[in-house]
Each structure stands twice: as C-alpha cells, then as structure tokens.
Length: 108
Image (cartoon, rainbow, N blue to C red):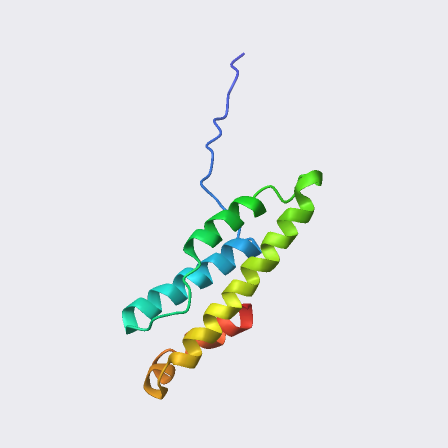
C-alpha cells in the first residue's frame, strides 16, 4: 500500500480591496501629472503610506474604527487628486485621457 502526498504551493494572490484600488488611482494620477508636467497641490505619498498601515488590520475588532476612518481618508484623497488633475488639464489632454477619466471618476 502506497501513500500519496499532495504538495500545496502557496499562491502569490492579492485581493482587490477598496484601499488598494484607491491607492492605484492616486499613484496613476501622480504618474500622469508627472508625465504631463502638471504640478498637483499635494502628492499625498507620505500620508497615503501611513493611512494604508492604519487600514491594514481592518478585521481586528479594536482597530476597526481607525481602519474605517483611514479608508474614508484614502477615498477622499483619491477624489481630490482626480479633480485636481482634471481642473489643470487642457482640452487636448482631456481628450487624450478621456477613457481613463471615465474609469477614475466611476471608482472615486
């Protein structure tokens, strides 16, 4: 009688939570602004880093309130960044990135 063992390989999978999606929006807007030569009011890189740390253990009971507040702030920052870059874009730039702004506005 032979015993067969199965091996289990850990997967490098990450799930798209709201905080991660909004972080990607902020990073994308900052990248576009840099490419187009637009100066944003703030980039929020340091603030975002701290907020993501606060939001990390959102399922822990004693940290839930702080995590929800951090997530709200991250969403607010994402909306601010999108509106800021839309205000500063010229009409030609808006036409070029129109599809991107539709996606960004839907998620903010």
